[in-house]
Image (cartoon, rainbow, N blue to C red; front, side, top):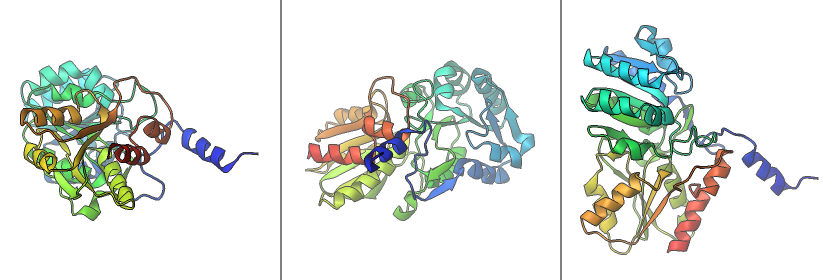
Length: 332
């Protein structure tokens, strides 16, 4: 007969694809698709483009609302980026969707040469960032920020939740130039409403203050940081959370202010490899400005990650709430 513990393990590891939302957590359906429709109502230059992944990047909502402004390019990501660059040269603003691994690894040269070199007004919104799928290295974009940070002219955005995405869509549209935004799709958690949050391109936001630890985070790791801060507060540990939704350009002033506060452990947390992401950018900034706090990093390892269910993988690679709490306690 199966024990309760065995049933719990089976439930946590049986599904290849799982939502990043916890059971009972507030979610919002397809925030990107709905925000893009709202934007298109105001701007006739907005078009939607994808490489056979409209349904899986929430662009199908835009396609239903504006079929005459939707372009299905087939399984051809290089063609997708080239065509988007051409449309931008004609005065349109393409919102381009695909999976992050395909938009970066497969189409890198076209983003670099066709879009970024001419500083074209193309918005790349790429789903399955970091460890948000269990389908293994072919679909896990654990190195996308590292690659895209190296491209001149390219702004990089890593939203935390549905509210962040909704607010980021019109903000990146108002920015004249190419943008790479990591995209959360489907039933997206909603966590930032309780923090009186407003997305501003290029700005970090202090969501909560604390005296012993400050977590500098982006993307879904900000959600985990907030959960960890609440859990650690029950143990008498005071944790601040600085959300950094724009990775490039970095809000240097806010990060330096957070890291300079005497006596606090600084933890940089990201849903990305330890190579080339937010933590590398923060470490370089602190070294350059000669700010030397006690600093730890929570990030994915420099490795090809396993396939499996997301809760299991998040535990295994140290980005679950429980793992973050355990690590912070061990560092204090």
